[in-house]
View 1 (cartoon, rainbow, N blue to C red):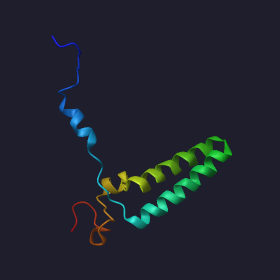
View 2: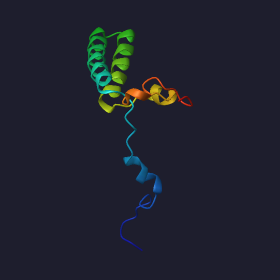
View 3: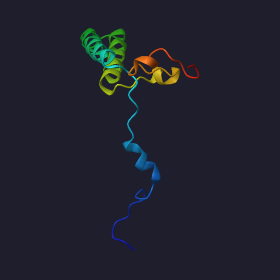
Length: 94
């Protein structure tokens, strides 16, 4: 018996953790999302209210969208603005 026990050493699910979500937001949108998200976060945190907290959460999601280049709503709708031809193409349409 080995000296160390590694219960998840051979789990194939762990290999999938390195997968990054695909980029589906264009560079201009990413910049705008990051800047606006940071501003909303700062404004929201400075208020110290429940509404301010909601603004900060919204700002954080915009910062995530801008830094990662991935938008879950775009993914659901099948939108990809990184390629100009596909900017307004929804899933299932050509």
